[in-house]
Picture 1 (cartoon, helix red, strand yellow):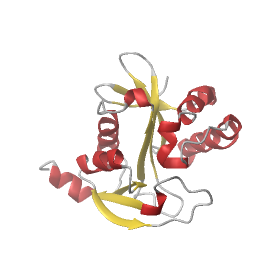
Picture 2 (cartoon, rainbow, N blue to C red):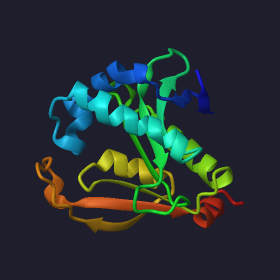
Picture 3 (cartoon, rainbow, N blue to C red):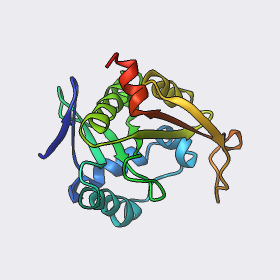
Length: 188
């Protein structure tokens, strides 16, 4: 296992082509996908032909950035994933932070723990200047995680989705934190 990052309770490792079943189980949970696609069933073919190749491609194109399988140290269980990577329209030193976790990992601080570790790695090792994160405006749990990280609300915006998830009429929100803000919050 190629470990990218460790926290107190998590190991982040690269995805492999053997992770299709784990991703399918995660994406096929309507509660996990509620704020992403309205909870529709997953398409395993899409995971194998689109999602996994995209995940694997990041490792080569953007060293240090990408999608990381989150493994619980104490059990070895796949809890979901975190991403820390620039969006196509953004510069490489402005990565986006995100995560998707199984329900069994909700409410246990894993989202905050993993995201905080990625922010620290980004600002101290990867040369990140500013980090963004987004979610649906109605996704209060994810918004709370972003606020715990010291990220601030930058904007609310509206996307034109082909098949919008319930709640999308309230918009999407973008949060951000700069390296200077992150250092100031730590007294550095």
